Length: 329
Ligand code: TXA
Ligand code: MG
Image (cartoon, rainbow, N blue to C red; front, side):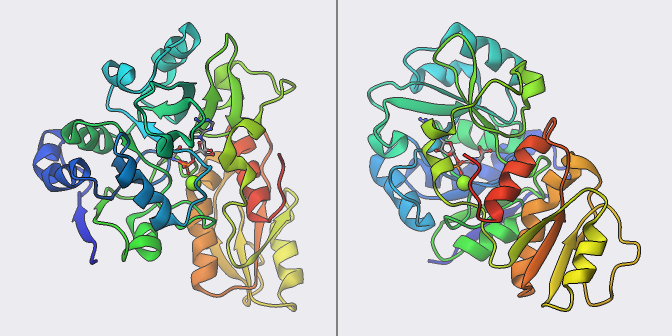
C-alpha cells in the first residue's frame, strides 16, 4: 500500500482545512489509518469506536496489545461519546488546559472497544491544540484514537518525514502540517479522583497543575510507561550541565559522536553537531528529531546535555533516561 500525503503549507487559513481534509476524514470513517500532526507529536489516527480498525493500528506500529490508546476529540461537547463520568476534577482541568498537551484518564463508556482501552475500563482523552487535528476529527465525525505515529520503541515523530520513515508502507494518509511545536507527548493524568495523579510527565507541567514535586505520580498505572520506549540505535550519553562539548570531544576517539547541547564552541571536528537547543523547551522541541538523525547518520554515540528537572525539563529528562535505556519508573 502506498501512502498518500497532503501537505498543508504554513499560513493556510483554517477555513480551507475542510477542503484539504475531506479524503483522509472519509478514510477514517471507513476504518483506515491517517497520520496527522498535533502540537505534541504526530499521531496515527483511527476510528476509536471501530475495534477492527483499532487492531490495525497495533499491527502497523508493532505495539503490545496491553497498551491502550489516547482518544482525541475536537471539543468538549464530544466527551460523553467515550467517557461515562466526567468528574469535577476533569472538568476543571479541561477548562484550564484544553485544547492542549494534557490527557485525562476517566471511566469509559462500555461501548468503547476493549482494543482502544486495553480492557482497562478507563479511557484516555484529549483535545489537541491543533486546528488541523480538530478539523480532521470533526469531519470524520467519530472520536479518533491515536498513538504516536512511530514504530513501537522508536522516538515519537515530530515531522511528517519521521512518520514516513517508520510507517509509509502500512498506512493510508500522512497529513504534513510541519514540525510539532512542543515536541514531546502530552501529560497523562488519572482524573477519576479529587486530585490529579500523574501517570506520564509531559507538556503540561507539575507547576501548571499545582502538583508538588514530592507528590508521587503513578506511572505503573499507565501501561505504556512500562514498555521500553524512545530508544535510538545510538547509545545515549547524558552530559552534566556545561560539560556536553567536553564530554563529546572526549568520546570522539571511541566512535562517531553526535552532540545535542546549548553551545558549539570548541567542538572537535569529528563530532557531529545535531542541534543546539537552549533550555528545556527548545530541547523538547528538537530531541526526538536529533535522536532520529543520529540513527540516520549511523552514529555510535549521542551526547545530550541535561536540563534542570523543573517545568517541561522533568518530562524531557524522563524521555532522555528512557532513550538511554534506563527506566525511571
Ligand atoms: O501527545 C500525545 O499524547 C500523543 C499525541 C499523538 O496525542 N500521543 C501519544 O500516544 O503519545 P501514545 O499511545 O504513544 O501514548 C499514550 C500513553 C501510553 O503511555 C498509554 O499507556 C497511556 O497513554 N494510556 C492510554 N490510555 C490509558 C488508560 N486508559 N489508562 C492509563 N494510561 C493510558
Ligand atoms: Mg508513543
